[in-house]
Length: 616
Image: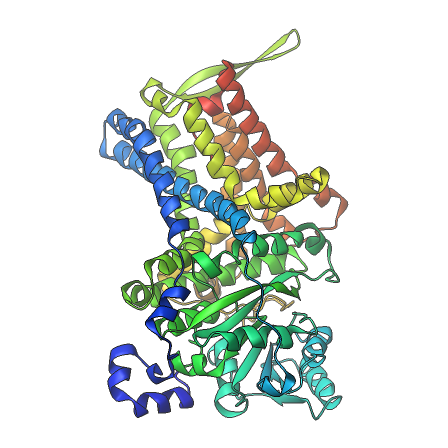
């Protein structure tokens, strides 16, 4: 959607509009020296690709030698995909390790924030609070209780539930001079459309803040971010830090919420110096000029990142404020957690397909920033490739190259002989201490920041890793469904995470065939985790992979297979249930046990896991 203000800017300077797109005249007027100073350093990504290149030089000949074992085109394709994905996974592992190392160095050199500005120099601010059947009074009140001289809170209410609309109106009535309610006739464009509607016709302040329905802003949020926004003429927005709301209800938030703050602290501040600062859709202060230059918020599910990219093409850059911390709620239930994940998965696919081609071709965005956008965003779409890799490594290669063998387990004086399947000698090049080491690096690199933050609290660390494995590590089948459904439809849906009701099905078709067609259409359109077919697919994957793991004694992946079975069950039960609190550790225990057995093979105690060479 192009805003009216943005369209007027384009008409005023047509020659720039043709060259640089809508709103080009609103780009910041900074010198070449200032732009060069603001450009991120390539050191982080240079180190990542240097390490990856060394790993490829060392390991690729050995992995490529596996292709000689192929005797049919199918065998060659299965091995080639295995090798290619394995080496791609190493790149992701080096990325996570490099981020942690550079973050440690960056913390020692962090620049102090700019000094506070006198009240007379602070601009008027519009605080845009977006809600859709999820109004939280405490969050709205945090927007109202800002220590700032000139601001107005706009409640952008897209709610369809009369009860929520009444609560919004009651809150606004309590502060009529400071709060305004803004509603529109339809929900076109989801959150982006809601924001553009308000900025086009109601909120005209030169600066605006973004606040989600469940977000708690600190009282000094506006006063501390405004000087940072104004200090740099090329700064289009300042993104604040976030942590899980300590008052958030629910056992799931208590278990996994600590991860929000840890991840933000390690990954986001580094982008000021080494990458691309992303707008994360909430807890941010934005210049209206940058919004005009970008032509408004793009009407995509991932409108925040799309806006930051379009603004960057026009010369605007973001900054991250690590020391200004907002609170956000973690999903209360596993169901809400899964709904959010599906929204993110399809939304990221939409962003990549509609925006990234133009961004990669843009000469106004440095390659370092392009890489910093791609590395985190491709993870969700690549989950489909990971899912296919799991099938390839544990089912296809086993069927093509497996040989029946007997596994002897000695327990005291008793020996238990278990029939199993192992890989033949043609793939023995997959074994070795160095391959095992780089596999461990790839496996544990994403959780390195959590280990460094929580190592002084070993019980807390183990609990977090165990519970997060059950929640995050078992999302593979769900992610695959989301990616495939997006590829088939080319559409993303803005699922409201806090919506406690099931998706609306409309009128029930009369015939069985019509009901099946309607169900299939709903699956493709939204792939909502409530859909029976989605949960059935997860269960089918869990059963199939568990049987394969038992046949091949794949201990680590057996844990994830059991997690695939557990996750759709958790969709319907409470995380705080006694039996759930025990079962959620099962995937983690099996992963650790499998890795330990693989390590024993380095001491001469051969295990099927390490003989397989599949350590993911």
